[in-house]
Amino acid sequence: MFFIMQWEYDMISNMERIYLDNSATSWPKTEECIKSVTEFLSLSCSNINRTYGDAAEKDEDRILSLRFRLAKLFGHDNVSTVILNSGITESINTVVAGLFNEEDHAITTSLEHNAVLRSLTHNRIPFSVIPTDGRGKTDCSKIDDLLESRTKVLIVTAASNVTGFVEEIGRLSSFAHDNGMLFMVDTAQAAPFIDIDMDGLGIDALFFTGHKGLLGPEGTGGMILSQKVAERTRALIAGGTGSLSDHLEQPDVLPDKFEAGTRNLPGLIGLEASLEVIMTHRQEMAKRYRDNILSLREKLRTIDGLVLYGPESNEPCSAVTSIAIKGMDPARVTEALKEKYFIETRVGLHCAPLAHKAMGTYPQGTVRLSPGVFTTAEEIEKTIYALKEIRKYGELL
Image (tube, rainbow, N blue to C red; front, top):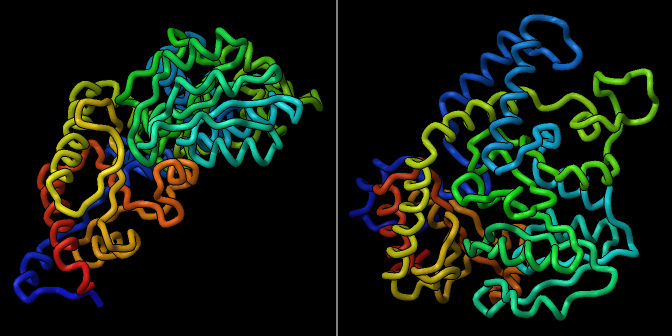
């Protein structure tokens, strides 16, 4: 039971859910997303490339529209290499397992999610980690020391899911290609409001998720591959595609090569609907995205005894920030935010253990706050108020 001052009861009773975990999964979803998923399940439920009917044709058109929207968003000109699956984890595993072996070597960063780190480890691909500058920002000046004759790929996150630091994608891409490596980018925390021009930057494989900034349902996402990588990568899963069914081998035709089995069509239809909204209102949403995180970070700086990790005010950042309150277990801070103020956040290592080791927050982790495009100024003010109270009365929790 948390200690609650008598005078606080009226305020708390009027509070509603404040959701600040959008970097895990965005909420709320767009009305268009919810409507599209419901209509698909209610009126269609076709299986594209299998069912022959009017509903299936309409659904095929929407999935093709989704591929075109994703290609446009990420600056890619080949819609056939836009691969749809369950998300970034499946995508990274597909490329790592299908393109590299134990004789190869990879370079990555300490900011990576376990989707990268565990995939490399699971597939026994040796890798080296670019060190940080002590704040949790990648120190690109140290990357030359990690090169080996067998180094084949540089895999980086576009933006950290712990600190919000944004990587120097252009610089890293140039380094990779100057040294004969492939360059691959995890966009989980960057899309869609941090611009990434895949073809312009020379990205060989771009991994995206549908359920975060793209405002789609969980279990959606995929990868966009260069033609070279798409042709060279062995499929992770083999099975029915609705094409070349007389062949026992997995088809090489794209995107079928990487889309065996039945896709999460309700989710992908919902993602297409949300992406249409985003593409229509992208400037407005991007402004809200930036305003929310900048406002939150600046207000957090005013709280005595609160440690704020990540970029300085003049540095680019994504809509993620990590904090700690001196003298308090981060888990207790998160619990107090939820139980006393109805504010939902995330605590721990956030599936990025090397980032916390670099920051000195391992093993306890941090409290992560990630506003979304639908977060209001009032919700940010209530969060700041709550953290000030937790800092003040922490010993009574």
